[in-house]
Length: 306
Image 1 (spheres, rainbow, N blue to C red):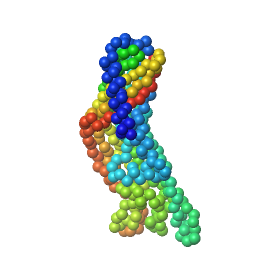
Image 2 (cartoon, rainbow, N blue to C red; image 1 turned 180 degrees about the vertical axis):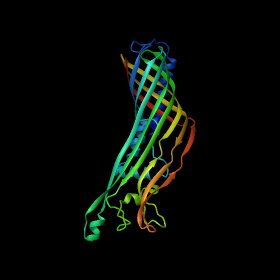
Image 3 (spheres, rainbow, N blue to C red; image 1 turned 135 degrees about the horizontal axis):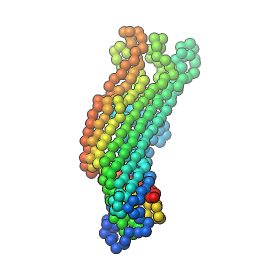
């Protein structure tokens, strides 16, 4: 994937250079004039690749939960959405205001069958089962507002621009169990993924608690990020009112804040001889500043002008 991105980036920059150096052609008949507006659908192949990596082959829901839930940090989707909608208004023949908006998210319901403890206590030969479920949600989105400049050569345009970026992300896990925890069953049978794969989202052990199990994991609010974006590319007006565009994008500066993350548990207290609920902080809130030229991406779009 990285090699493909490099090849596409080099090709896009080559087309941009050709457009910039070719000044022999006047503006084409298909290129919109000042006062025109457009609506476009933008596809980000890098975000698509990340989404594809998240949903692994085989038991993809369980694998995704194991990979995301075992992290001791925040659960979020932060970055450019895979698909976004972009609006442009041409202030002049060579300058346009633009704004894009996109969302992304995921919702999983992971299920496992475990032995029905109540029936098993009555009959050790019972093979009846109940269902444990993990409800996993993630969400994210972003806004980009800025200016775009273009230089025409025929029905092709060299385009470049800059914008201010805001994005957010968050997530949560909720656990539903088929076997109730009480004084008759202080350590109920529970799905194996919690013990084997979820790490910091799994069982909590304490001298007073036999085997506390998670009820919910959540962030206190969302992660928020602000940054500056730059891009350079080409736009081809292959017919009146319609164009295809390819841009190499760069986000050289990002500042982000991360919320605190907690897990709520239930466990049977040996001292109090009852089931208690409590929460533990998994990760403290934090912030970071990223700068440099590593955050390179691609934007492919289909645009309708009116």
